[in-house]
Amino acid sequence: MADKLISPQDGSRIPICSLFRETRLVFKPDNLGWEILSIALPSAMALTADPIASLVDTAFIGRIGAVELAAVGVSIALFNQISRIAIFPLVSVTTSFVAEEDALTAASPLVEESEYLEEGSNLKAETNELIQDKGGHAQKPDLIHVNTNVVKVEHKRRHIPSASSALVIGGILGLVQAIFLIFAAKPLLKFMGVTYDSPMLKPAQNYLTLRSLGAPAVLLSLAMQGVFRGFKDTKTPLYATLAGDLTNIALDPLFMFVFRLGVSGAAIAHVISQ
Image 1 (cartoon, helix red, strand yellow):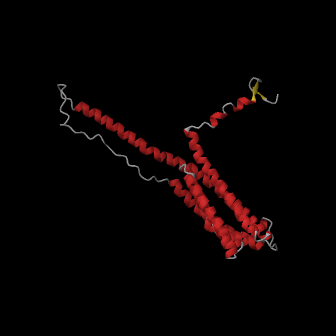
Image 2: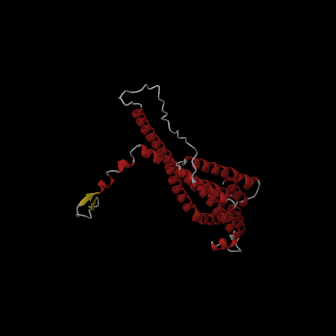
Image 3: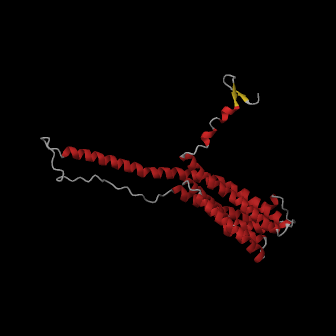
């Protein structure tokens, strides 16, 4: 009896396999499926790139000491939690508005072109009627010249207001977040359980303060990701994310061990990579 379900309408039993009967349509290799895959796969890879870079970052910090590793962990958690307040609304709303405006802007030249073509066909029909004389005899076609090419539609660079607005809002939110974290670092860390007499306080405060300087870049990059997703371009954000993560991985040992900056070097490397 476990392989059947009871229909809520007539009480009959329905095999569970019927629920997956149309599953093959989900993986049907049509044009729409390939387009969705080409958009979703780079986006998913971009989401996995940051956690991998964070693991490498954590591995480098762990070589300094357990206290520093714990301090950086608290600071990263605090930074990420505050960033999430603006991240998801900013990216989601930006993607929706940019996609809508891009679709409307792309459709308007096609509408204008169809209108002009219709006007040209009407003008041509009227011209054919005019070249007939009163006796029904057609005049010579070389005596009358009509230009049916009314307007040539040119493809110009489109202006998407929501994209510019998203960048401005992202920059402003990033500045607000940076100022807030820099001046409220100690109270926030205390709220997270790091007391004023804890050995974790100094490295945590140093890392959080320096990491906060990259908040405008973080929110701007997320706003740009939302813009590119609205254009159905997820490869460009993936390339940018990979470039930033590779830069962070390369700069971590340089600032932490060569320049002997420790936890502060890890934060500086992360800000530069952003």
